[in-house]
Length: 241
Image (cartoon, rainbow, N blue to C red; front, side):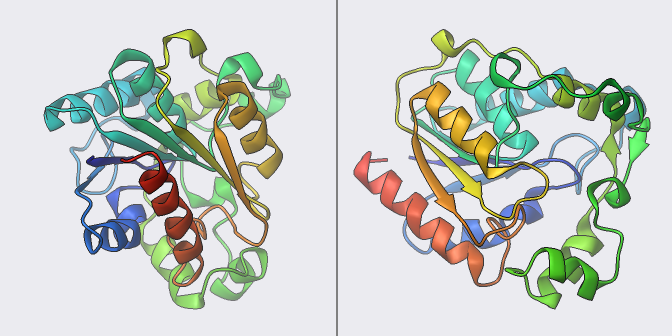
């Protein structure tokens, strides 16, 4: 089945480059979307861009495939993947370091939501330091990985981030019963592994933790991505996907 990949905050299709190469070499067709205002997609006013806008992009891209696919999401992209599965027929779900939907998301402190600027960059996510500082917090990444992420990170919508922090409603009953896998990173400083496990329990999904992996190490780490893609390949083969 085709793989449909959705990036998270400040990301783009570049997040999935190594995954696309890995799966293409093993016979899978892959499609990585750029949400509006990210990477090579059209420029928009990010200050007025909402999570619903991103969900519309994710649905439009999925519809363009013309057939059911396995939807893969990272961070905020995992929340969008749930929205796609809620409204379209999918073959399966792979949610990597996912943002949580409202039914199981803890209430955020009001000041955390209030202090998100209308438009933000990597400083808000803790990625504004030197490569050596960043790597100490993300030891599964090489310096080359860190420089690449810092170079390619764009800007993000404050409105969409606030909505993500507050949680958006996802109806579990409307998500199909296809196979699903949730992956958590043990040193993920953006989306804690415990939250990934909570989502897996809520969905009734398989859960695979990677204790030594960071948020970006799960998807772009020069070496660390290989353990994750191997696990995902096993999941796809077991589900005949």
